[in-house]
Length: 269
Image (cartoon, rainbow, N blue to C red):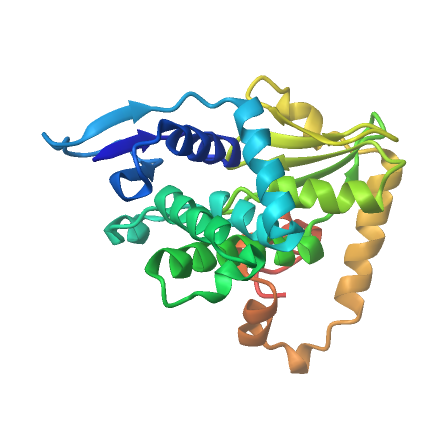
């Protein structure tokens, strides 16, 4: 048995897929993982995978050409999903599930239908992971708020469970092509940067001056004040429904939404 140890990222997993396929060890004899094993097996060879962006691009091009954009996006969403503590009881980790799903997809006459094969445990696992990331990205498309900094950059901060930045970056680059904006993932210390009129890119922000991110323009502060005033004025106290509000706006998103972080707001408004 050969176990390929990959970085927990889209590029890391796609590099693992490339190396595993190129190894010619046979798909039945190969597993991929993003987890360091707790116990090493005597009869298993462990192979460390160094993330290679060229290899990742080759896998991406193949998947796009053979499976189509929709299925490719779903596989990327699965690779971006967080493996939570409860997931660790699942013997099939996400990298191996994605690898086996890709192997199946490329063997089908119409690989774009691979995620319909939910009877296969690894396809079901990939589907669940993809849906988890896709749902969170969908929510953030509605909840994410841009604020204008002193330097004129539109800035938004998020605290997502899953690595949704690539999907948010693509969405907002398409809708705000002539704006300089930044979406900052505070959980992973990474960000999407979009220069005006250019493609977006992902970057590490561990060395970023975080104080700069709290310096808003005077116009932004005025709009925040007006918006919060409007938010309070339309509220009908007799119809406050915290349970329904919690269903529509999850509490974990509220730390990044001005209506809930402004000092004039109560926790349940």
